[in-house]
Image (cartoon, rainbow, N blue to C red; front, top):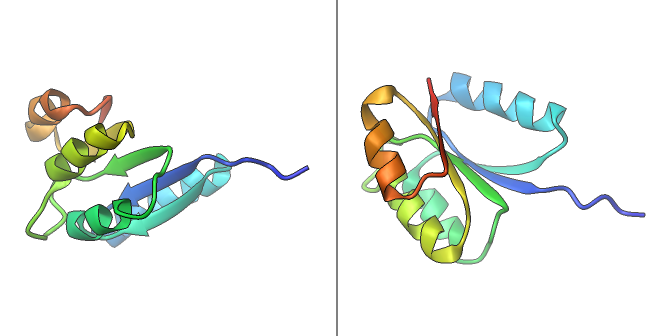
Length: 102
């Protein structure tokens, strides 16, 4: 019987941070897709619906993690923001389900 793994969209531009998150997701048995910018993540969401999104706030693109949260909310996808504490209130107000401080 095929295992039905949950799929996570990881949005992180920092290579060290993404390697840490990727190793944890693999260890915990999740499938994932890595996008390095919010722009790439938003493009990915046009044709894909992950079970969860974990996003950084600042991904050095014209869009940011708040834009990802807003789009995910319209699609019914829960989001965890993983960033510095200065954006916690903004992330929660935008619709993030949980905030992890870096």
